[in-house]
Length: 493
Image (cartoon, rainbow, N blue to C red; front, side):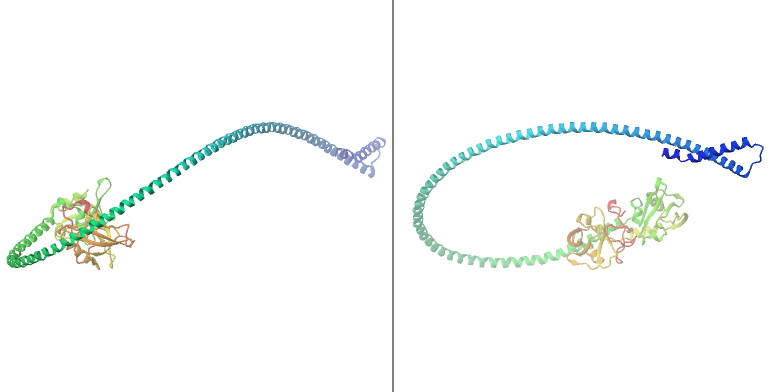
């Protein structure tokens, strides 16, 4: 590359030098003469050659600088490559040394392991030989003991055979003696039988005579007893009539006492109204109201916030009941907040008193059963009250009651009649739970038990239905209110 670069402009340089020399010579020899066109052209060519020469010099200088730079870069690259090669060789030697050292260590470990295995093999062989010797010795001992045992068994067999022969001879002798004794016993028994038959005939004759005498005496006693029974029946009828009349009076007194309206024993739920305490004890809000109660007829709705009664602020359920019935002879003015606006309602406490006192007994609630009356073709238990008779008998939500007292149930009123006629005794009912039939005994408390108007409750065991079903007794049974004596755990929430 360098040689070609230097030879390529040689002709141009020589031509330019000759032209310049010729022009200079002409100038010195004919300075005063006018320049001819040929000279002018030669001078122009000489200038162009000088420019080319200068460009060639610059290109040559640039080429030299580039060559020097390339040479320096090449030397640096070679120097770095040689350094990398030396480093790689050093690392390779160290790795080889490490590998050789590891190989030596592995060989030493392998030799030790082989030596240990060989030693274990020798030990196992020695142990095996000793075990075989012991086993052979035990076998010889067992054989000797077996021979001796066989000899003893054979001797015992011979002794047993001799004893058996002696015993058989004795048994045969005993049999002959027993036969002789038996013949004599049979003769004596036959003689006794003949004697007993004669005595039996005499005894039968005497017994028949005694029976005839006893029958005659019994007939006389029966006639007298029948006469006494007829007299006792007349007296018992009079006594039963008096007792029944007393029981009816006592039941009327109990029902009247339980239906007595006592304000400090009444809660809002007994009137078909359920309240919840607001945050900070700032007031009470209606959480639910029975659709067929006097409270609903008075205008209260779910979500109403009770502000005051007759101008007195209401902050609790107890205060609501006490203030409402403070003067139950006069109508009360109740202010509620509904939808952000205040509404004034007029409530007559006498309506609530009449509804409570006119309530009849509900055997279902007395037993702790709430029925889902949305199923017209079957009796499905919606809820079982805690600590009630139905709860302790094993009845659960979702059960289908199919029969009571052995009678098939076709309507809810049949179940109510079956429970109402128990007179405090247990009633046997048949339920279907999970396609399995179960027998339960439910004991219904006595008459006069009241229940609250039913709220809108839901049970997780029942199929999805209306969002807020209203559960009410059948049309023939009026919903009753709970007495003050019923524990709060048996009341609806």
